[in-house]
Length: 158
Image (cartoon, rainbow, N blue to C red; front, side, top):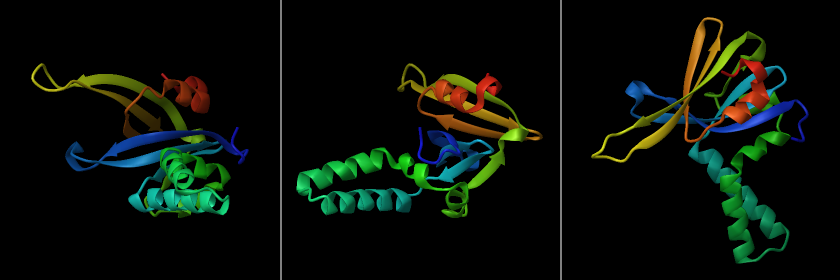
């Protein structure tokens, strides 16, 4: 369980389509007891996580390969940094970060589709739709997040 007892689950990456769906913004979803925080993943954040992992390994006396290994782990496990952060710190990290109160979430729907045809590679894609009162947030994922979302939202997940 996370160090921050307020955190229920950390889920990512999720992709929010941009203009006409030609590109995406990546987000990590941090679900707390009260709210769902969407933290935008930026190259600067990944760079900082990797550098922090390298410095930590160096302070532990690890050599080149130990530092390199720590950098790789840091880049892969970047979401774990949110464990030690407060919701306020997460929201202030980037102006694009936002939150939705869990109390207004009506449903979380999971979908699956394959895109492409016989002449191109078939691509699997999972969709996550969060409906909260009159707003709908459509996201994409590279894998099935149903178990993680059920842990966070329980019976709201369909």
